Image (tube, rainbow over all chains, first blue to last red; front, side, top):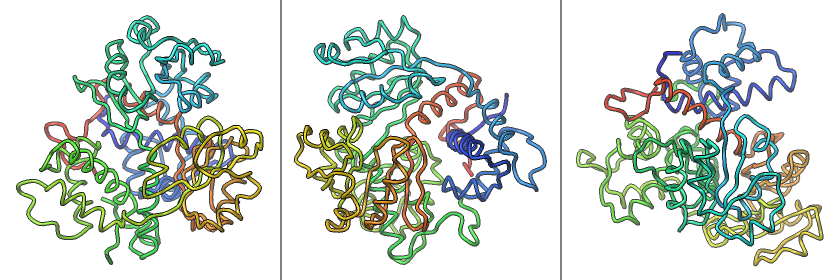
Length: 225
Length: 225
């Protein structure tokens, strides 16, 4: 594929892919852009535009074929590419992630866990090999790990990011309550703020309560942007 | 405030609020829309448009005053509104969230936890009152809880959502690996997909590797939408 796709569109297309998986599992055959939009909180206009970045998908007047759209996104975004992942920080959150089935047998398979507390490493029971944090750079490099999840306390987050990046990690999901950065700017980092999710909910409720919120797929949604 | 703000703009404004908090903590006084955009992965155009929904904020040719923009978002989105929250499901993930400092002393304070396993409830040490799941609807109603976090296994997620909603919960953050819905459509639900975050990272990496990814704030970002 040689088209240029904007980053926010890639993110939305990944969310669409997941929705198509679910619709397919529920036996849904056809879907229209406003339905996709309503599910994802995006305008139908944006949905159509995002899909258009992937090139021709055929006549859509009768809606999108769910299986076809799913395959279309899958192929064009290269979602069949397998990558190895690791979890840095095995407190409660890291342990919870180690238990996610998808993290163990999906396309982005967790093949190592790290923690600075050796006692903790010895206590944990998991099929994933665990290592002390000081070996992080070496193990990441040796195992060819490209994706990492950071679930360490705030004060350790940037140092852990540096070690992962030194080992060759190309993408990081950061749950620490502080943003981490890559010095080169070459590593993709998604900072996830769980408390911020409550703030978003509360703000949406405030506006809903004062009737100042515009749902993106109301009777006449217009253009979002 | 009597302006109508689209839902995606509210979400982006909440992310901007958090960024302003951080910039302020780092002693930054002034910020420009392309800088905000780069931090959040959004075009400068969208940033300016989102901020404009909040009304007049003064001359911006010299950039936004960080403290002023923060207060502007805070006031207009009603972020000072305090709400009670609860956590449903106290496995590893729920326990991790119970340990988040912000969840215990922030504006959206967790004042109850629920689990179906009575033995688990007795083992957990926390300052938050814990209750068996069968009392969920009653406790949520009695305590005036408006926000809830669902961290239960897939098969229990919709039933737990129904109980929370029956108790009067208005907003839900769902970590279960299945989307939950509110029958009336009146409850705000944000389904969070941790595995999907790895998919997004991988897709972005694929496109970066084939030079098909357009960073939104490159040399000539143009309009995102």
